[in-house]
Picture 1 (cartoon, one colour):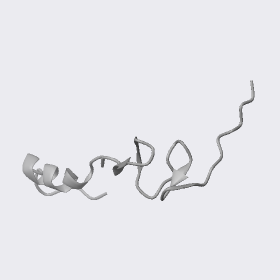
Picture 2 (cartoon, one colour):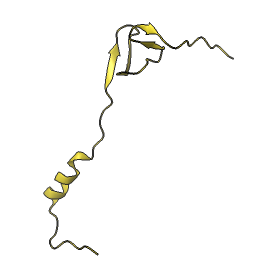
Picture 3 (cartoon, one colour):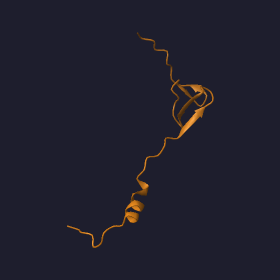
Length: 61
């Protein structure tokens, strides 16, 4: 079993873990709908690049 010869310092340990972080999602403000959405994704209202691509007319009760 591999055993370290010396103790890893806090600085070295934190430098190694510096890349392990959460990224914030790339949110864009959609002017056509006035909502925020992920870039390159369809907005919640079904619009993409100014065109209606998904019909949300399903009104089942």
